[in-house]
Length: 490
Image (cartoon, rainbow, N blue to C red; front, side, top):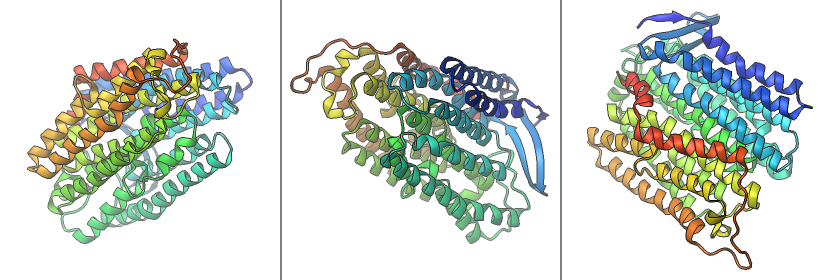
């Protein structure tokens, strides 16, 4: 693999950091402040996009920053795996900037400068995770994401907000420091390096390593990256729903949970490697372990009347699809898991954007109150229906591509049990998504209410429709994302 040293990686990393500083400096001028966020988002996406040709040509982009110990450095790297996350996150930041302006102004939210600055800092951490060349760099930026998103979860500064933020930071920092940090130290002692391997087959462990110790390290990494939402370390995610909807979109689609599953799968494939996981029989047990999260979170989602709470448990379930696919250790399974990083992001951000638009226009949070609302807000609920189909896995929306590859992966692995899990989870998806769209378009309005056409804010509706349309496009033409995914599996 040809290695190219380029400062583009550093510039892409610094853009959201500079954008955050600019936002704070222009805080008293709302239009200028949001303009700074937009310029930063557009610039970062342009830089990330400029790296695509080299990565698709099979080259690895590298930017060493500084070394701490032999084999331990802060180094940036772009390869096919990292570009899956980087392209999606940088593009969705653009949509989130437009949407956030409409949402925050529509509700006249306080502390909008802090909100925009922390949002940019969260993207700084996320892109740092995406472009990490080693476990140490990834851990560093993983923690930055946790710290920078705490003020966003606590944004309302009330008892509920502080309680949700406390749970959020405690879960994520204690698991990372209590599990990932000691695992990272032991990996360094065993291997003499924390650099990721160049392919998914080999990993970084020597052949004569103690297998029991490697298994323990694997478990620590699987559970320690708790942003991945795997039960039992998932409860921070529903608790964080007290935050404003743009924050929920950031948590569930753009940065936080994607940082979790990206870190988990990066370590599975580029630290432990497919061969080591096969030899220690770590793959299929992991798949069945996360299957519990897939099914249980879906069952809990069925019981939630609050729309954001239902979407939160949907996220818990859907994230485990990514780990489930990768842990099958088959080409189709890995591809299905990795492509879901992108497919889930576009669909889930649409759903949360819709939930926010509904709240801004009607101040309704509960599904039981939304009878007939689809006739009053047709664009919003049409997008919600499209994104729901993606979560279910229906063609021609993006989620169908995920389900297809995951089903193929389960057959390649000869695992009928995983095939049944995927079918059962799809039926549960239908159970908690279909009634929402049906009720909105065909249900009766609550007692005493009449259906009248409501104005859907343009600043929110355009990002919603854009994300929904892209979900359809990448469902019908998945080749662009699949180029990166297939490059990972070789």
